[in-house]
Length: 403
Ligand code: HEM
Image 1: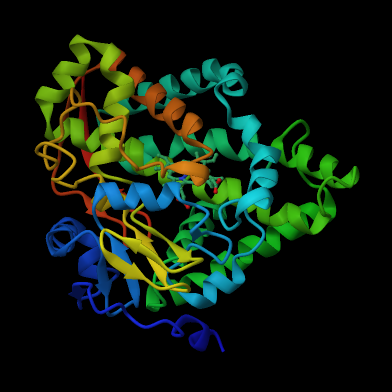
Image 2: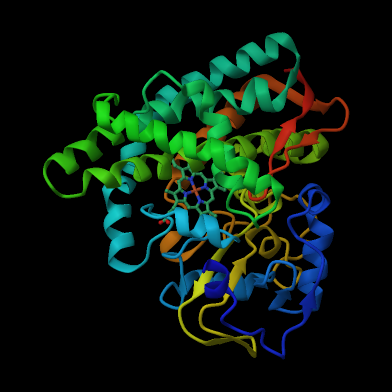
């Protein structure tokens, strides 16, 4: 039934075709040559293996993200139909007024004004984490530094109960992994993601949330009849699942990039006003989120290619952020370039609701490192995680040389 639904449209004849998988293990571990090939083929490329219209270039990717009336999220943003059918009820997977209503419910907690109160506590935590790392000298940038802060901050903010927090990282990663094509990776991720949903349902049933948290506020909205109680678990997951791996990716990539580009670290040390742009450059250069899909709600034309109604379009954020048509020397990591227009946090109506928090956490760790660390040295090749959606380091041994 689902397959019928997906295959009703025919590939447009005027589109270049790319046959290899963009979700194979090798494509996940070494994505940039593939993205370059896709961009060279054209602004719209038919991914024969996945039956998707890929948008590998910046202009078309951004335009499609902004046209949320044509390119819809309500039928899911995954690259496989099964998961798209399962993932209902989130902010990410909704359109129009429904999307606005859901986003309003929680996004105000993540606005800069609401986050201001959190800044000092996050800075203190970041300094503690970095102090401990500097004392050790040799650390894993991922497990000893980047992972610690998001895990200390986000579950409390969302109001996730203290039990089962050990599972959060695995559950969150699985929830992303499922959103790729229906490969083995995605299939084996399903049970962990379902476990997370079950636990979220139990949390709501037992009202086992932290007082004053986002979750607490959502339960109060359900009590007042503003939202259905059955909406609360998906919304909780909507905010906790994308908040860990993504930020861990940005923080660990930042450390790794400054270790491998010592001249950029020196630039940042000499002028810390570059910090906000440095974070943009990290997210541009190693975009934590590779790609999501949209369903074409109507037949449309993108850069001369006709995309039929019902087709799936793949917004390749990570490729758009390396597009040589948009960026000068996109393969260079340079914190002085104007990186603010990257699409690493998405764009348009669905642009990341948590980017303020992600920036706050990443800035706190980098500031703590700037205060204490003269230089960062890599100690061997890093290991990248294998996930259909998230690009992030799994391990990155570094030496933090104190100032
Ligand atoms: C560096 C860290 C992060 C990156 C790179 C990132 C990236 C993204 C991207 C690309 C989207 C757009 C999805 C789309 O186009 O369909 C998005 C949406 C979203 N993100 Fe993030 N994210 C990060 C951190 C966070 C955090 C910390 C939270 C929560 C506290 C969060 C919550 C969300 C939510 C709820 C949405 C859906 C927004 C909507 O559909 O209106 N993200 N994120």
